[in-house]
Length: 355
Image (cartoon, rainbow, N blue to C red):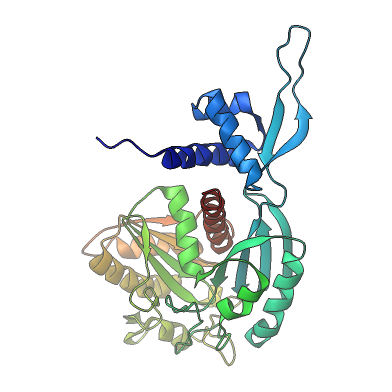
């Protein structure tokens, strides 16, 4: 059997030390030895290397020592300038940017409201530039309330998409403002990732019902995005409307529930609609999801989806294949999903930087 190289063993030790400091914030070398299960000499060498790499620093704090208390111990933590991750959301309510450190703390945040999607190209770089000032940004995750091309990160304009920013390329806009990759995804996909962390279910569908309509499919614990990244764009899925079969988005048009000059759903007028009619249309969508994806459960989210969950359950009880329906539980799910991914990517980037 080939023995692992010394370089590999050092790399593993350094990762254990780094990840322990990410969760415990500050530890002495003796405490690190206990937490990691490594020997004290191994921990000491690892700390020395990580300090040389600029990833770990002596906090200047000391344990009580002397007069029978043992040696004085130095507390170590991640270096103050080790870097942060940027999280950006682009939504009808506006553009939000956050900087998240490796402990998971939000260390900077800025929100800029918008009155129309056309403001995004001008607002996005200014909001981000102000948020990242004085921070070493290693990477960025972006949540967009528009379809996203998975290969390029560009926003895609599809017919009947209610929030049309236009030909925006977040990767090109944001890359000059930071020192690492920019990962862009649709807001519903990020929301599904946030729910997955809570549910612990490997196969489910996330049905988003808000001003826009969306869906994310999670299979074997992974969001399935499709060839171009447009899986889950359900607006044109054929379902049952007030006057027969029609695209899902047209149901709201036939009920007079669209905002003026847009395909966005008018939330103020939605309570006027017959919930049974809405549930019947949603039931048709769920039938398609169950038939094609075979989810264990369907999570119903969005600003109004959970409010008609009982009616949806009644409708789905008559379907040939049954599936459990649950309300979404994560607050600000798109932001939460993008933030969790950014934190995981940041921690991995710091581990890679130690090698």
